Image (tube, rainbow, N blue to C red; front, side, top):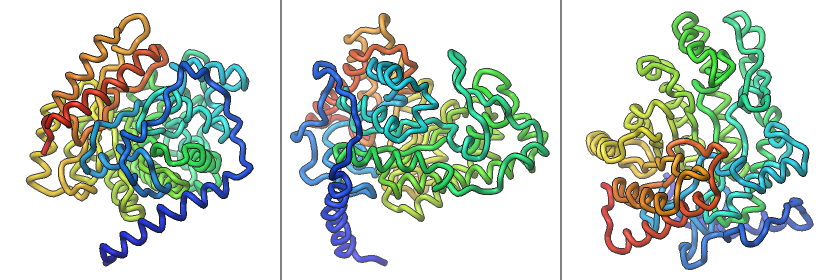
Amino acid sequence: MVSAPAKLVAALLLGTLLPHAAQAFQSGFSLGLRPVAASSIKQFSSPARRTMLGSVSMGGKLENDLMVRVARGEEAERTPIWLFRQAGRHLPEYEAYKKETGCNFLQLLENPKHVAECTMQPVRRYNLDAAILFSDILVVAEALGIDVEMPGGKGILVPRPLTGPEDFKERIPKSINVDEKLSHVIESVTLIKKQLNGKVPLIGFSAAPWTLMYYMVGGSSKKNQEEGERWLKEHTAESKELLDILTNVVIEYTSAQIKAGADMLQIFEAMGEFISKESFYEFAMPCMQKIQKELRARHPEVPLMVFPRGATYSLVDLQQAGYDVVTMDTQTAREATREALATAAKESTPPNLRRGAAGLQGNFDVKLLKAGEGSKEEVKAAAEAMLKQLGPSHLIANLGEGLTGKEDPELVDCLVESIHSVSDKMIKEGGAVPA
């Protein structure tokens, strides 16, 4: 067992050496960033709002470490916030960058320079407490040989989904080398970390195995929605084999992101609404448990967040599996969820970093941010109501689902600033702190 002094020395060495190493690599290195009008940009969190020393993570020392501290179960001076799909099509600078480069979404993902630029855009514009890797949930499927397309207006499609067990065995390898197949993503993580320069943490992510399988056998989020469940029932053995392959790839992929500098991880079970509760616990949950167990063993200090959209009945069980932050979708009952997590943690201590109730993430209604429909007054009121219901501590403010591209950046900015100002006031005044 490593002693506390030894851990402290190691942390200090990391905090001292890693930033200098990053600076050395950065010398003479150009990221080719596009200028954005100063009036549309907010700087990183002010020094007064940061902790004096910041956290030391796998990616080096952080100036604004609110997200990491809260995810680890520590107290913070205000509620941190980031947003699902914070990078991308709701930003005018993103649309301008696509036009300038002549690239569509999938083409942008192929170039680490483009990925870094798109990742940084929302962090420049808003006072967010984290950046998240600009990527797609289906890159793992692509790495396994599944073609992915993005025809205009139809979302992401898999044009040749797996047709049956024989097709699966012919087309899907037992394993892959993620350092080769997903090298462009790993390079992107390194590039983003250099540009962030420790200002805020970087979130790495992956889709969960069931969500990947859903697309690989069904092809679309809008059609063939029953195909995944049919596979589970009619091709049970092959389904489990496919999920095992996907689980192992997700572990290696997310682990590689941490090694490249990601400070924390988000696992997205985006297609939770298209699997029955019974099937979720039989097929999806074991995958999630294995991912948590393996990543915790490899990277014991890295916070793990999870979002089972459409299947938030599983939040307590994901907490008990060891996830540090569990995420509510828009329909999730706030106060009841907080209470259920606390009760379960008291009955049986979960193996998460806090050794107690998991932090909560979510679940602001994205509809209030839609251009031409919401107002700043409504956004402020809804933000305050969410903080009062959940308490400002052990909370990462976010949305109940991702930004759609129709949001007004001014309303998004209003949400970010409201979360910060209201939570700051509540904590200073001794607002309710969850158990």
